[in-house]
Amino acid sequence: MRLTILFISTILLTSCLKEERPVPKREAGDIISNQVSIGSKYEHQAYFDLSANQMTGKNSKDIWDIGFEAGENGSRVIINTARNMMVYSTDKTNLADITSENGYLTNPKFDNATGNLDSTGIGNWQDGFVRIIDMGYSAAGSPIGFYKLKVLDVTPTTYTFEFASIASTTSTSVTLSKKVEYNFTYYSMLDNAEREVSPKTKDWDLVFTQYIHQFYEPVETPYLVTGCITNRIDTKVKMITAVDFDDIDLAYASTLALSENTNTIGFSWKTLVGNNYEINPNISYVIQDHEGIYFKLRFIDFYSETGEKGNPVWEFVEL
Image 1 (cartoon, one colour):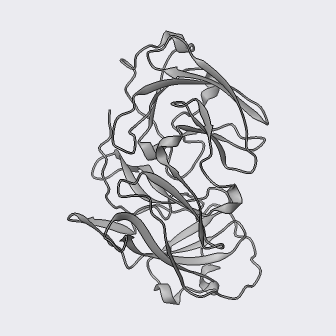
Image 2: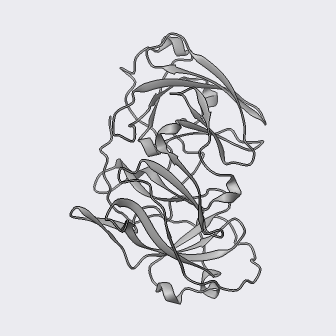
Image 3: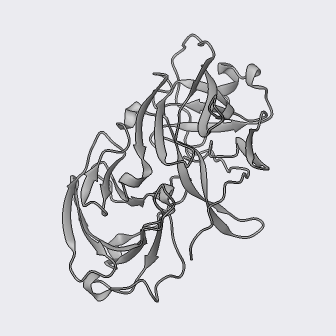
């Protein structure tokens, strides 16, 4: 089942996950404005570091398909939901036994937008079964087709996997090294190549991108949305609606139960009204980065000075 690409707003879920750690006293900063451009077709993914006040990476969403969790104990595999990718389970253990997606396209799975790596589309690949990957849509909006993938092994330093286009009777095997300074090692099955996608783990806090969000009302339906995702490693966020942006200070921020869900900022800071997006002026965010520094942030636009969408503008203050 193909997903209809819509951009609508909803209320995001947040959760309190870990006990907050003490933060050294710092002087509050001045209000700063910045923006990134991901293109009017949302074709790019742009990474931003709050403490450095700069974009630290930008890539076309077309360049990668799958990512392999870094770290000695890393074993999970993600898909590029910015392309509306989906995963289908099979009952086969050999890639050559599958030459068509027909008969398998039920119960599509995708990575949970909260960033929970125990809830990915590929899931528990250690079961030995082949996954069929709907490769989604290119930035130009063209369907890419289907591939098949089997992850074979993981060690403290490598992953081994094999893949092929859906109709192929031969496959490619790859052993890929984990990149320990990054969240994931990224790979393009389409180009059979490792890809540089995100900056190093400690060099970014936010990424502006498309991703799949699961709606439950009025019906249970996944949609491709455009928004802001936070770094899953030691970045925490709380959406604030009951306190004015100007009144948020470090004393207040320190009392909050922040969430590690990567989609806490998400996309609800903007709403589609007619044919244009409007910023919700009542939403602010408190963010704690991997250094323990608190920031407050609010969005002020989604358009460039020339009126092109896909150009989020925000202002933020170090608390």
